[in-house]
Amino acid sequence: MNIDRVVQTLLFVGLIVAGMDHWRRGQRGWRLAALVFVSLYGVGLVATMTAHCVDIIHNLALRNRSLIDGSPFTYNWRTYSLLLFGVLLIDRGIRVLRAARRFAAGDTGGRTDILKSSGLVLAITVPLIPVHAIFGVLMSVWSSLALIVAAAGLRAGRVEPAGLPAGAVGA
Image (cartoon, rainbow, N blue to C red; front, side):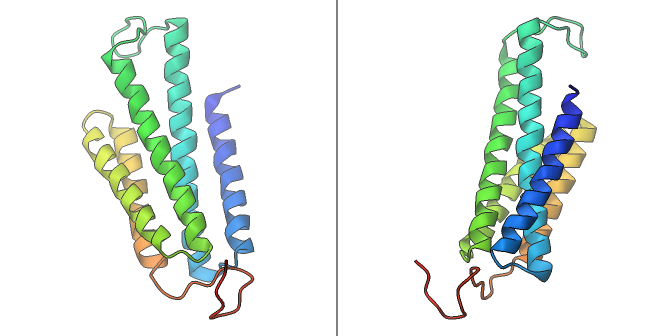
């Protein structure tokens, strides 16, 4: 099966599940749209970077030839750093997803965590633009949009978790 189709399917399923989860938690309007966007960003980081790591391990196991210089894949500093890069971004994606769920449940501190994780991904991916223009630009723009959406759409205001009336204290 083509890994791109798997990633596209995961993105689509993630979009639907995140939208339903945030809707179920009582989010509506612009806040719902912002939460779905940052959740899709988190799912995208996890799905694409997991595929990236699987691809590196697959090429390493089969000793496939590198597209860059034609040499066989071996475990060296380059493969280690490619795997580390993927794991760092997978971690940030998971953190964004958790923070979005917390925010939807009424914890406004989730917004700060979304902003921190998106900012860190941006700091990691901007320097990649000269090395890998397509990926560097794509991830940098996507991270910038996640920052803008979280900053504008998830403003610290009164957030009531689903099922609780205004002013009620949840356990």
